[in-house]
Length: 319
Image 1 (cartoon, helix red, strand yellow):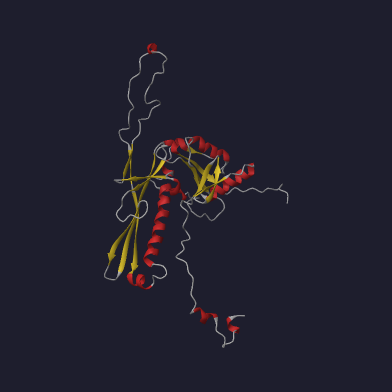
Image 2 (cartoon, one colour):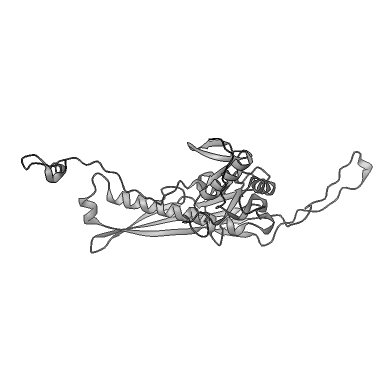
């Protein structure tokens, strides 16, 4: 029965709503992602915001050595291990924003959710989304822009195939940690595996399942864009797939953040109260300081320009 047909002597739902307790959620942010990349990286805290990557001077063998069975087999070669005289330095990048909150709004409308806390929470989530994007795409330190030419792989066909993933493993063969790919690229890879009859196994990290290839997890991220978009509209598109080795001891990829920040809350994040102006507007300054260093060239490889729009029809499947 509609509201129009209810007799006037009966309490309507619209009137009853005024006395009802309403259960509500905090603010939902549709564009938030799990941000797996920062979780899978190893991180190093810096004291000064600068990280110098010292390397041995390039050469086939930095130091000759003599392998002998007796003392009379020959003279022991002499020399030293030479260092690069101009090593690269990484300076932490800051990602910042300012949140303005009317103190009247914060005073009157902070039950059940504190308005200041909610605004800061949502701003922090936005900063961390941008942080992950910078770790992948930054012109200065991003993974994509810092892969050497020798570590770049072209696909055998247009789609990402098991053969292509094996080629990446041949480039990062010293204890590879994880693949990194857009969800559409992972789906395209899954279709190629299904077509060949080699479905990828799964493994669980942080309470979530991940596809694997050769035992290496394939980590999804929408920061590896498809044709420049996080959420491509069409079925086709080109993207890249990364294979990463992480960890300082493995001479891999290392996330960098600032230690002991004033107002620091989580890793590399600072929240500072800036005061209240004459109009009663309270301001908060939020900053995330981060960078990323590739300790050796073979710590990362990229499969370039793979097509995610190739589909198959299986006509011989019994119904």
